[in-house]
Length: 491
Image 1: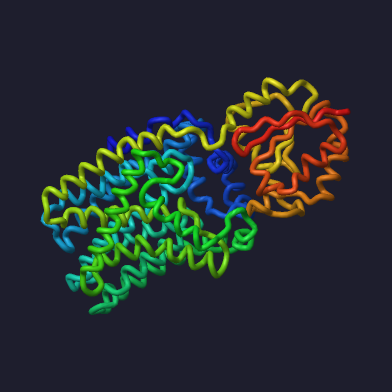
Image 2: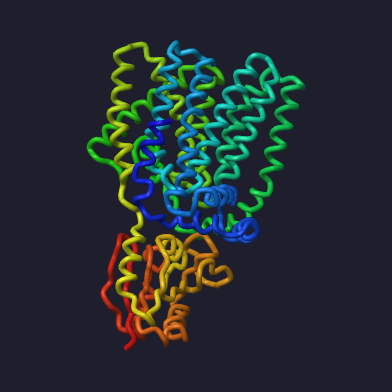
């Protein structure tokens, strides 16, 4: 836990909030009624995490580091849960080295490159990972108790049910994890079934389903927008899976490449170890919890709407690390175990530190500084798409007039192309861009400073800049990655 805290605390406040984190900050600053009544009408994810963050910011504050510290709390708490699950797994099929298995799984959870990457952001993924770890622990306890011909203790049933419920409410794709948890438990639950164990299973499943129903209705109401977002699907995207279980591609260096190779070799060994067992075993249940959600996400993306995104599958690292710890502890050669353990420590620690100290994904602080130096009284700043105002405002206050295009976020009700998967972020057509550029809004400002983001996605034909250039004199474009700022001066 100390290692996990130390690695993740480095650089926690060195980067401005990027767009997704700014969503978390904005939603959690709304009133309770707006958060639960209005936000679900245009936001695809449940408001549960934003509600926790709202309570957290009332206690800690609303700065970037304060908002991210809630993720830090969940990520550090995940480590002992993973180690407890490793000890429980060792009771099913003893390795003879339970401390080694638990140490390996716990260290991987503490220094995982992908987990460090996600745990430094104010997003719901650390909550989902923590809940899934609790669910895996409850599942392993329940499988052991059911194999002892009992009905399973109520504490294990309720632990599994509670953790599954939190996983469902933590993220829109929590249903993938719940389905895999149910499938992993079913063969053991139905074997040698008796009235008591069937009754307890039905009661817990019913409670979980009833409590999840409001969340499901929210998600279903937004399902029609998923296919209109920027997320796409191609079968070759499955090649992103190795990066999920090793090192993110953007963080690959010579040293981290060695760490990626070591982790992939350990994944291979864990999968082989699971297939060496006979019948439905705990190792095969872990394999389902590990590979099931990515497989379901790929199938749904192929047959329906694209939902495959590696960061949404990060919770599967928990069963992966448990399987790796058990497989490595089961290795007979002491020298081989020591070499693998040394390779894990020597390569993962610097890789985790490298990721913790990564530069900002979106340099909204630099954009704000540029605007504060150049925007004069009487100028206006236009933001397209309109949600760019959220991370820009999160950097600090401003004194100039700021407008979202086609309307301030959330622009619900405006009719136009939806390219972000949310009716609150609407693009404009050619005719709408011309009308905006020639409308009343453009008559008063001496200079309009147009801030655009990911134009290839939201404005592929550059409709807004071209429309403004027809009636104003365009200036030089300044760029920070895919964020551009361009002045348009009145002629």
